[in-house]
Amino acid sequence: MVNQPTFCKLDYLNDARAYRSIYAIDPWANTCCTLDKYPGNMANKMESWGTYGKRVLWCYGPGAGDYGWYNPNGEYKTVFAAASLGVNVC
Image (tube, rainbow, N blue to C red; front, side):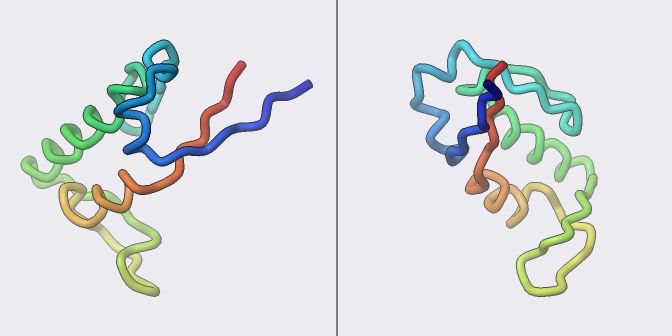
C-alpha cells in the first residue's frame, strides 16, 4: 500500500510535536532540517536572499498574470508560509 501525502499549513509545523522527528529535505533552498524548524529556516533563508539582492521567479505572483522575479523577503515569503506542504511518509 502506498502512503498518500498529507497536507498542512507551514505555520502548524511550528507547534506540532510529531514533526520534530521528520526531516524536510528541500534541495531548491539547500535546506535539510526537522519539519518543526523548516518554517523558521525558510523565513531566515528568504530574508538572507532578499538582503543579498537575490530574486525568485514567481509564476503565480500576487495578481493574475504577475509572472516575474520577486524579492523573496516580501509577499512571496508570506504566500510561501501559508502554502500547503505535502508530506510523503516512506
